[in-house]
Amino acid sequence: MNLIKPIHAIICNPVLEDCSQVADTGIGGQPKTYINNAIQSIITIFFIFGLIYFIYHFILAAYKMIASQGDPKKYEEAQHALLYSIIGIGIIFSVFAILKLVGTIFGIQGLGDLSGISWPSL
Image (cartoon, rainbow, N blue to C red; front, side, top):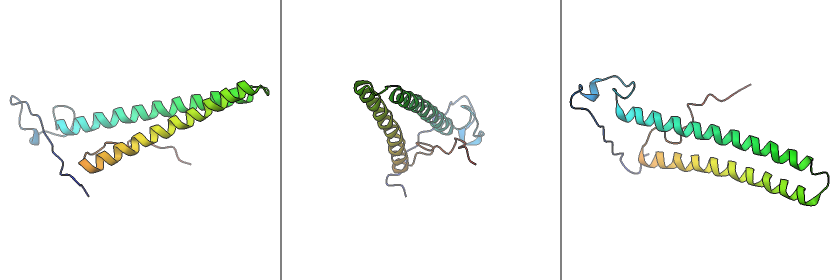
């Protein structure tokens, strides 16, 4: 259910044919569809880079924790790095939850939608 009716501004070039008659591919088609796809792609790329960054720092912090060899200062630094990496991934997921909420409220298709990612399965 949309709480607020979506407002769509479709920008058409008067030299080109009517936007409603053109196919939904690329910029020459529906500009709204193109922008939605571009925003979804950008969000997906940030999500993937965020996950890679999290995995890298999580593994690095775990290695530092193992390699601390009982030194309390090194162990505490590794513990903080591990905590910060977990907090970071929590922030990434909360940003996408907020984007999904905003997309649902304003009726924006594809905002915070990660269905374009092919998730690995067994």
